[in-house]
Amino acid sequence: MKKLHAHEVLNMMGTKTYTEELLKKEILENFGEDTLFYTCSAEDMNADELIAFLKQKGKFKPQEEGFAFDETKRCNHHDS
Image 1 (spheres, helix red, strand yellow):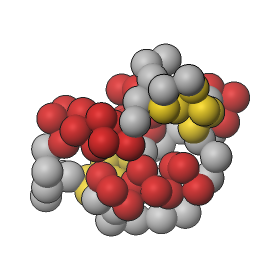
Image 2: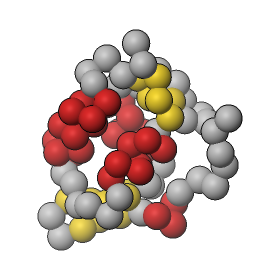
Image 3: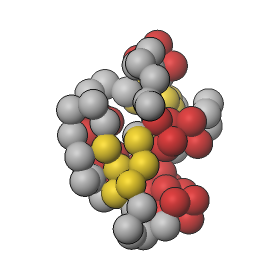
Image 4: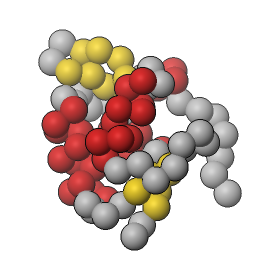
């Protein structure tokens, strides 16, 4: 089972607009269904849990037809 930092998903999102369904689809296509994600404050999240976590943390900004990653909400720490 792969484990990736949530930054991988945020980097994948770029400036594209998503719905939750589209974001989940792209996460699964890009990283696989068995991948778990972690952040500085949470671990072992699947795609649905990660999306809910990022939404709750205010990482998304509303768009006309969904949301996009809010670059102003990017953490500045670096993974080792």
